[in-house]
Length: 334
Ligand SMILES: [Zn+2]
Image (cartoon, rainbow, N blue to C red; front, side, top):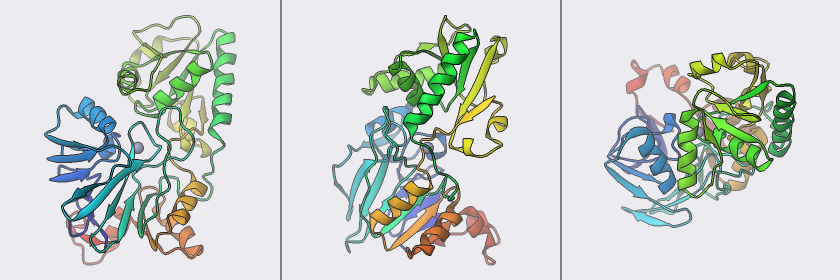
C-alpha cells in the first residue's frame, strides 16, 4: 500500500514522510498554510511562501526545508518534487518517486481556475494519485471565475451607489487576497479586517502586491469591506446600512448564505470543482486514485464508473472497520 492513513493523518508507507500531518510529526510535507493542514512538526518540507505564512500563524518553526517548485531533490532513497497546486499563494502538490520507480502524487487542496494571487496548478503524471475531494460531487460545477467576479463587482457597485456598504466574507488566507486583488484591478477600493490585512501584507512581501486598507472601525467613501466569515468583528454591527455576501463553493447549495449569516452567496472557490477533479485524475494516468476529504466516496464512485480504479479514505471508512475498537488508534493501509 503506497500510502497509509494513520491517527495523525496520511503517511507514505515505509518512509518517515507524512503528508499534511494533523499533529506534530518528525517530518511532514505541508501543502499550504490553511489551519487544518499545519502543525508544529520537527521538520517541515514546504514552499518558502507556505513556511512564511505558517510561521505567521504558529510562531518560529524548528527545522524547515524550503523547496522551490519544479526542483527535484533526494530525501533518503526517495526522489521528491513540489509543484504548484493553484489553491493559495505557495500551495504545492508533492510527487514522491520510490526506489522501485513508483510515483505517488498528493495534491493537497487544489484549484485549477486561473488566479491572480496563486501559482497556476500543474497536472502531474503518477501511478498513485491522492486527490482531495472537497467538491467531489457531480452537482458541483462552478461558473468561470471571471463571470463570478463580474457579478460581485456589479453587486458591490450597486450597493455603493445606494449608499449601502458592501461587505464580503472570505477566508483570511487565499480567498480574501484573491477578491481584494480582483476588486482593486477593477478600480474598487477595499478595506479588510486586520486578520485578512496581515496576510495580505505577507502576500506583498512574497511578491504579490496587495492594495488594501486595514479596517480600524470605520470605512471611507466608496470602500468595499472584506471580512472573515467566522468570528466577525463586533465593529461590523455598527456599520449601517450594509449588505453582505459570502464567497464559497458551497454557494451552490441553497443553505449557504444563511449558514454564513450573509444576504447572498457567490460560488467563488479556491478548490477544484467536480469536472476539474475528474480531469485531474484522468490526466494523471494513475493506476489507482485515493480520494480524501469532503465527498471522497462520491468522487471514488464516479471515477470507478469511468473505469479508473479509485477508493475513498475517510474517517467514516475507518470507523466502519469491525476490528477497530478505537478507530482513532487504528492504522489502515490504503
Ligand atoms: Zn486549503
